[in-house]
Image (cartoon, rainbow, N blue to C red; front, side, top):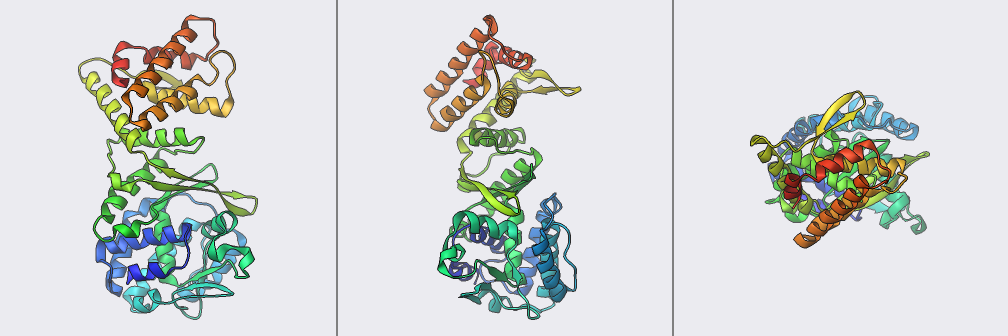
Length: 399
């Protein structure tokens, strides 16, 4: 039932990826042919697992969305529209579970009903005479960036998707699953295109052991995108700190970076992420440093952050400096040294070539020593970190 429903969904893009993530929770818990009670249990269990994400900060709904959902929610659930998208999504899931338990929704009828005409696309059946529009944070990035299929303005078809409570619940459950933070006014969503190809046997490893730890690392670490290299390294650093090793099947994932530009949600970037090489290297890096610490060799570097003093692994500290170099710029002989090294090491690690890793490390040592022993200008923190990098013990860890 679920596989057939997704196969009949007529478009590619973000909406399909969210639908497949949302449906994956049902497949994990109830299989491909769930009845109404099994659907309700699966949605409730998924919402419980994603409770922290459902409570995370999201943006307020725009006036058009708020007016539209206020009308629909009153008809569907006798509820008013809340302030934020997160609150809206949680409300729809909670109330749809009640409808399923009360027998007010026929899952077979809903999932078998997909219609397209000049006014748009309709998923499911009308409930109390109403269907909900796709929210702007999902619809607009597809419409303005991808313009594929139903989204193309030249086809004469309206770029509109309407959903009944069940289809809407799958979409927003997928949103919560892929949510990797709302940081600096931008949404970070991670999806796994084609995940339905893993139904029903491998999907739990990809969602529970892969995508959730990855997105939770993004949220807890407030990892934002300056460059692709730094974003991937900081995610992998967070996973290494938590001693998490993700299954290989989770990669690649797609990162959607969505921002409100003026009055329109726009997809700023779409990236393919594969952290398998970085995670393996950084997990080994952390384990080696911690092993040395147990024998009395301290490898962390002490730095000031505001009024506080913090201890960091040397590589972690260098990545932070690289990020500051990008945001502020650096003058003098040491210009962008941290970023250049981090980018160099990123490429070497992902190549899987030990010789390239050795070359990138020795290159930093040569440049760093020239900076420290010469007259080049560099920040005090960069000098402290470079000195820590050049400890003989740390060289052994890096290699």
